[in-house]
Length: 129
Image (tube, rainbow, N blue to C red; front, side, top):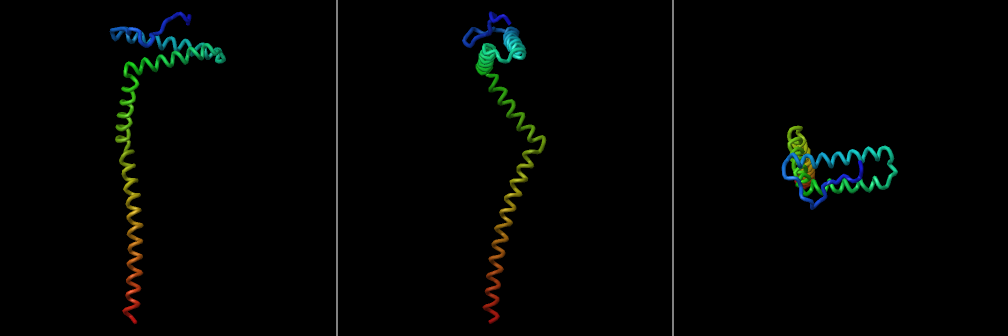
């Protein structure tokens, strides 16, 4: 990497066609790859780290501006929901919630039954006398 190669800067006019957009992304990817190769050889290089940080920030900003980040996030959420549905995770969660509710209901019912039995016992003692 010569350091003189330009990367699309935010605010610069972007290529119009899909081919040019892909070329721009390929160029960005190539620069990142070359920079990472240099880092592997000399990780202590502070200038290289600064360049990587700049490239990463530019990449993120470019993807954010183009709406890619948001679209990927929505796609992931949709995928996650469908995966949960397919694997039965949602059904399992619902079943667990209902079991907890049933356990609480059973505890209340047992408490009320014990109260009623105590009252019956007290009444029986009064009637027997």
